[in-house]
Image (cartoon, helix red, strand yellow):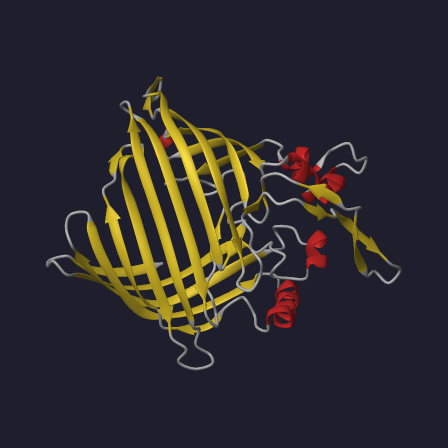
Amino acid sequence: MAFTYLNIANRIQYAIQGFSSDTFYFGQNQYLYDPSLAPYIDRDLAEAVQSQKGATAFAIYPFNRYTRAELFGGYIHMSESYTNPALQQLAEDYQQSQYGSALFRNGHMAPFGLSLVRETTVFREYGPVAGNTFKITFEGSPAISDNWLSRRTIDGDLRHYKRIVANGVLALRFKGFKSWGRNPDFLYFGGNGEMRGYDYLEFIGQKAFFANAELRFPLIEAMLTPVGVLGGLRGTFFFNMGGGGFNGEKFTVLTTKSEAYSPFLGYSQDLLGNLTPVYGPAFQVSGLRLVDARASYGLGLESFLLGFPMHFDWSWKTLFNRNWEDLRFAADALNQDPSGFTSGSSFFRKVRFSFWIGYDF
């Protein structure tokens, strides 16, 4: 919920906004809680919420028709937690012991920042068709006292669209994010049009990125039906890659170095219920492969049936190296098929169908 006043009567435009918002996501990330709990925590249990309430003021100065600067500042009260109280307490205890402080933020914040924005994108009824857009933002929040959140963040979003023939489009996007300080911010992403084939907001990181390349083309311009003319049908070939990590933790996007790797196979449980991780023998891994990043490719259909941009996607995940996937996802494959006939790469690369509603980037 938000209330906004905007004045564009002069070249220097300004706006004032008061808001209250709750964002739900899935904090199913082993950096947030003890990894030994992973077998017992599914996506429903890992539901988390970020609540923000406050007010923000903006000043907007356009340099020309396409480029502008945006200065902003305000006050926000933020709180983050798992919706399950027991998991929230376990996560707080783990984060305090591992990182010295809680990763979830709770407190007051006085954010300020500056953005540079450029937009030359041309739109049609189905979305962007030509031009480019970028937004580079620096945001900070001072440490007024111990219960005030302090951080610095750089966020960049770059998009380019190349028209092909009349209605075809090659769409490219890169988003990078880095936050540091006493209470760093996070970037949540995944699923839908950001990382197709993965769960919604599956990825989280204080340093993160994702990139998209999509070829979009018309299949049917319009559909004449007994109930009238319905929206057309467009096809998409796509490729995505991205990942996120936490400050102070090693984050390797990809490598070609040879190394010995012992696959994680699961947990063994003693009579007292204590869990001990079980690893297989070490194997030599070589060749190009993603380490902490993930990728996917596939095809999709989009239709504005009933006026909504509905997407039907078929996605295949990949780390670019089947041998590496066999080791990396050995435990998941064994959990699905205890007989051992399903390899880690077969489990990971299994085709996934997704339906979602939303506009393309």
